[in-house]
Image (spheres, rainbow, N blue to C red):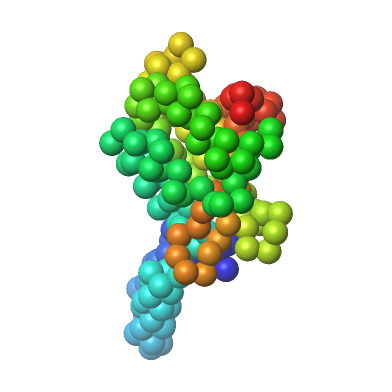
Length: 188
C-alpha cells in the first residue's frame, strides 16, 4: 500500500499525461468518446486523491514524529522529545531508554544541541518485526556538539507502528552521510 501512495506525483502525472494524450488524439480524430474518457480520468483522479488523503503511510507517520521531535528540540527541550521513543527503545550499543535519558542529562545535551533538521525522509522497508518499519533520513544537528557548530548524518530509524496513532522510535543507527555504509558511534 505504501508503494502506491509514496509515488503519488507519478500517479497524478500519468493520469494527466493520459488525458493530454486523449485530448491530442481527439483534436485530430474527433472521436465521440472523448467526453466519456475525460470523465473517467477525472473520476480516477478524484478517487486517487480521496484515497491519498485518507491513507496515512508509514513514511508520513514517521515524518510527523520527526517534525515534532525537531520542534521540541528547537524549543529547548530534548528530554520532552524522548516521549517519541518507545518503551522498548535500545541503541546500537544496547543502551535502553532510561540510560539514554541519563546520558543526555549527564552530557547536558539541552545546551549542546540547539536544533535538529530532518530531510530526505524515505521508507526503506519493513522492520524486524511485524508492526515495524525502517525509515531513513538525513539529519543536520546544530549547536555545539563535539566541537562542531553543525554536523550532518544519515540516520536509519526503526519505528514501532501503533494502531492508535503516531509511531514511536524503537532504535536508530547513525551513518556517515558520504560513505553511507559506514556506521558512526555516538558513545552510547
